[in-house]
Length: 357
Image 1 (cartoon, rainbow, N blue to C red):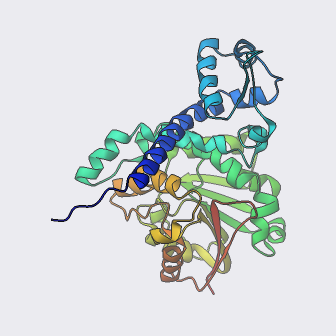
Image 2 (cartoon, rainbow, N blue to C red):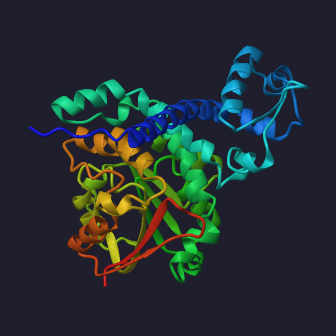
């Protein structure tokens, strides 16, 4: 049996690191509340104001707002004038905390940790017994994901995402058949259907809840070139049906991602394109040491992406399955040509431009 000599300098440094982690975790909860109550949006429009003035402007209870402001001030997100007892959100901070800052609103992503914490007991149980936690246990997941999709995918859709595929915008204008697998609430597909009336759009999702929302949105806009269906992507049996198939952060949490990719390959026409958006990462953990959001995405993966796949007896790839595994699985599905592209200023997503030949 060996003993280790304690390096007091390293121990103290780690203690400091732990204090930073605890403070940051607490601030994440408060940032989520600030986003959901629109306190950041309200403060961005206000001059230096008292807690009562801020509460009045936001339509909230002053006592709670004051305590929230205490966390914001000590966490260096909000500035406080002790003489005037007023608070102000600096413009430089508002640029990353408000809805008008999209696609740079990082406060949006603070919603995920408190949402995932609601299933902590079930996840711990899985640590002992295996298995997973199904989608139905995640309160607000679809709501938060829809908001994240709107910021991360919808905002850059026309000027950023579509131009990644040469000639795609022109093809959509002329008229092609498009499938979105794991379409969620259908925000992307409804926008495309409205912008390109000559093309035909289909959306599949496992969740009847999200498909209901997607259909309602299509009806509101009176779109006649789109349809949505509740469908497990592993059961798609179409052949040579679509010119463009898209998935947006949808493959890694599938129970049978290998089968889904084979189904996509089969459903795509010979000269078609598969556009796959996935979290930017490497497969091996040591190659993610410099990834600025690696701890965040490993956490989201452990407490959602991986576990929902395992809940249905799946592979449990997880959000951090990485480029190497993704390229291997695409090749095994039959795809011959794979390009990986990124959008400027986007630290989160990779876009795989995939062809059958």
